[in-house]
Length: 398
Image (cartoon, rainbow, N blue to C red):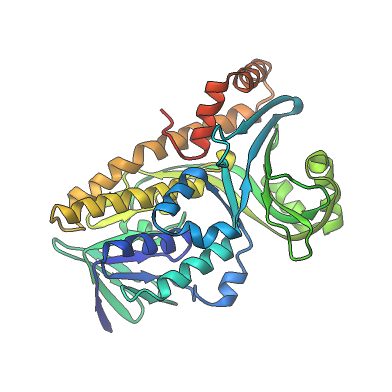
């Protein structure tokens, strides 16, 4: 078995792991990036048709680290968000109070991944371990060891960026708090006839929310959007099996007045809805970032952006620790990262869970509260701006 020694070992080469490697390379640390897939292959990139909504706050961070110049061209701005509860009279419109900025930006995952891979592949400080499965991890007083199928890697710190079903978390037997919603989300990329005008929509029904995110025009110059539709598992399973023409007819009933007639479905995929949060974001010489640390209901569209904040916080904790001459895997640095990241994510975990419950209910009392709340927020500029600022990732919840 071959041996490799480095400063940091990152497990997982999805968007979170790739971005973590890119950001931490600015500290001049030697980094190992591990994934069980051949994540740099064109085939691996082409199979991910999902899109990611980048909040304005994340965009500002990307500008700071020199990444936005590379990805900005490929994004579609979200200039307004319109929210409707059951009917069009119950509505809220969100805009960025700064006219020169947007609420967010939508980008295809495969494009963002390709840009990040190009950046880290040319970085001599980052060693890529593709098709490498984690067999075990061990943490000692002065180092941590990752055991792979052909290698073992010694480092000062392990970063788990291996997703919602984190293998590292299972090996460590990390305690988590979790909730299963018994719902699934159907993600559909499609072309349509009406210009979306860079407006995102969130439509609340008693069966679950339906979000419409604007995308860049397709190759055929048609208007494009991505739909995320949450519903009961059995209903989504049924929709996955029906012919596209039938699904388009159903979607047209829900979305026609916002994006016009749907021309065709490009691709679709579903995933089960659940949420979790780790009891802490660190163990001995180990920290968790992104979905390995937390996942929330997609009702607020903040999942990816919480992970971006994790990475920014981890970079700051490590960078400050290096300035103080500390071991980057020390408890002080790991705990500092936890303090920076945990509480905002915990609050968002709770808030999205309660919002989902409130919007699913047709209870008369809750319906009245929603109606009053929508009217209040839509007419109170300061409250509206505060919520918009939160959605952009530019302020804390409380």
